[in-house]
Image (tube, rainbow, N blue to C red; front, top):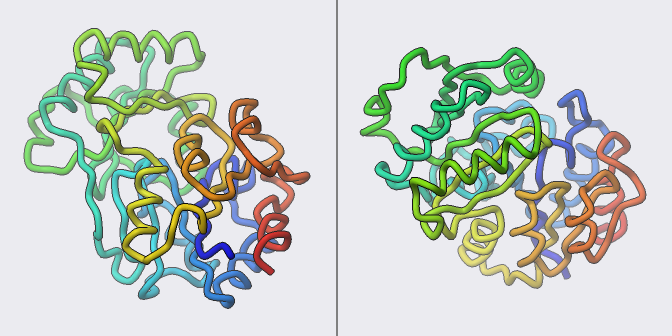
Amino acid sequence: MYKMIVCDLDETLMNDDGSLSDGNSAAIQAASAKGVYFVPNSGRSYTSFQNDLAKMRLKDQPNQYSISYNGGLIVENKGNRPMIVNAMPYAVAEKVFAAGIANPNAATHVYTQDVLYIYNQTPDDSAYLRNRGVSFEAVDDTDFSRFKDMNVMKIIMALPTMAERKQMRADVEANVDPSQLAVTYSSDRYVEFNPAGIDKGSAAVQLGKSLNIQPSEIIAVGDNNNDLPMLEVAGLPVSVANGIDKVKQTAKYVTTADNNHDALAEIINKFIL
């Protein structure tokens, strides 16, 4: 029996326009009524999907949980209480940021525990974020010391092509020991840097352990590269129909529906209800 679903948001649970469908919302509520935890497991901040949690009837609820920043932060939904914080060492974050700002084509995002800061905003990236309810503050200078007393959860760069994202990874790893980083790609636009050992999978296992849930009792649902770590540790790894090839190859089940047609409801109806 599966006791927890960990699920990516963008291009998995959410429609392309950033909305949560009525069908997926109803299925989540039905799973919750059966005692199955539904846990958003997103690269985004927990602050960006509060309205969606409200539609799921999970907002501000005790004993319900969310994972943000590719595993950087686990919160209890009641009061958004931090349970586990997996922040990036400051010295590492500073070097990653330096590589990002050196590229004039990159929008460099610094995710602190509660606020997203962006250096060198681009219109396309800003529109993508706003469409998903993601608020941010613009950074106009390169003084990284402003983050000295904050938890930096991850740093990501928006770049238009995969070749540029891979080059950014190489640029970062030229100055940072790759063993200190967990690197993923997401949404066909980002290269993402977390601390080594921190990813959506490690956080799912951490949360499961705290709830007495084994990895074999977890369903993980995703579509993209940064979802692979949670698919690789879950008892039932699932790809939505629009997932990339690597995610589909890792999955034990691929939905018939894509993210725009209630793929999560298909999963819950098949494996939970």
